[in-house]
Image (cartoon, rainbow, N blue to C red):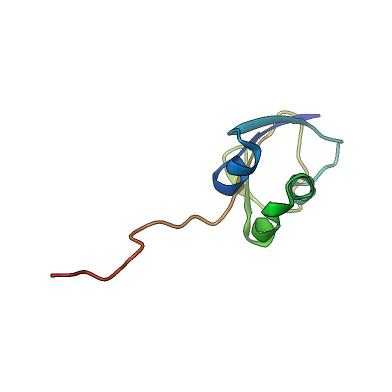
Length: 89
């Protein structure tokens, strides 16, 4: 089966692209996909336990079995805002 994997933040930096087409074995879960990604790029290990999954525009648990044609997004923690919260008057 073939899925589209959308990459953001650290995942995109590791692969150097924003999207991959992957061929997976039937029955592969979202967490197994993440395992493959981390195996290929060990520097992503730090994000494994905090990454969420989006499948076809919906959040999904790690044990979700992927289907042919799915669009999967790995969602690492996102930070934002001002780096220094001190306001000088």
